[in-house]
Length: 105
Image (cartoon, rainbow, N blue to C red; front, side):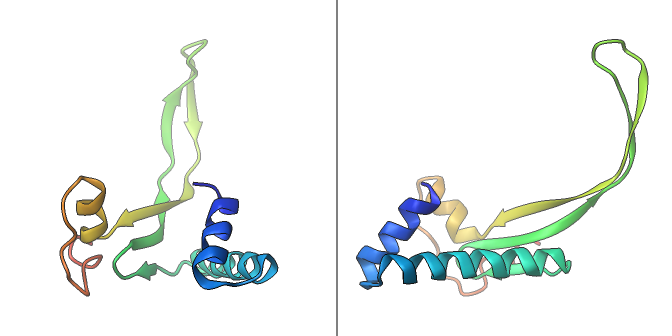
């Protein structure tokens, strides 16, 4: 599903105009990005959590030459689905828990 499809679905289900639906989706995504940029965890109960994880620097090899190289550390964004979301994706029925994305952290 693309962002345009999400916007179209939001328009259909809420009766919002295309401009309002686009603004709502863009604002929602911007707030998630801003929170992650500040290093905050973004939790959407019943869906999952987005957070930033630090990857340490490590050694690797150039696949062409076999020469050792140093790979610098970096910050990566991680998404961890909540329990009911995982169950739904795996073909089961979601469990009705309010704190389902906090159980495995």
